[in-house]
Image 1 (cartoon, rainbow, N blue to C red):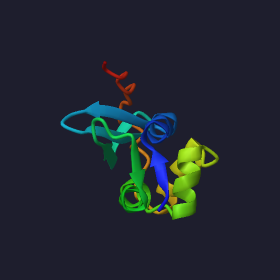
Image 2: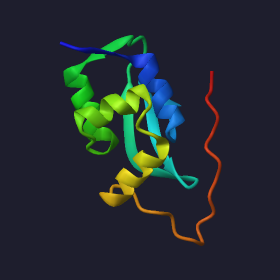
Image 3: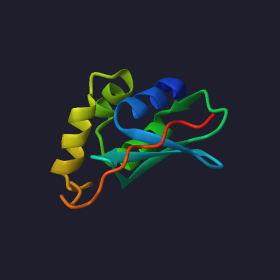
Length: 110
């Protein structure tokens, strides 16, 4: 069974428009044009690696990516623009209304 590096996954999330919201888990919310969307995933505190079953769960949470797309997401050939287009094409997210004031995502708390 394959394993995937959690730190690499977290960095990929942040590079592709997700913002961390640390709670009892590390929640990551996807932001589109300055607006928080309903797309989210999480990692556990102290998690170093995850397996194929967790990869499958996260694929669904991030927008029904294929396994190949998810691996590319983690390894970074799957870009932020490709993710944005994937989510828009499947109507998982919608562009914010033109009159809605965008805001900058919060910076990571430490």
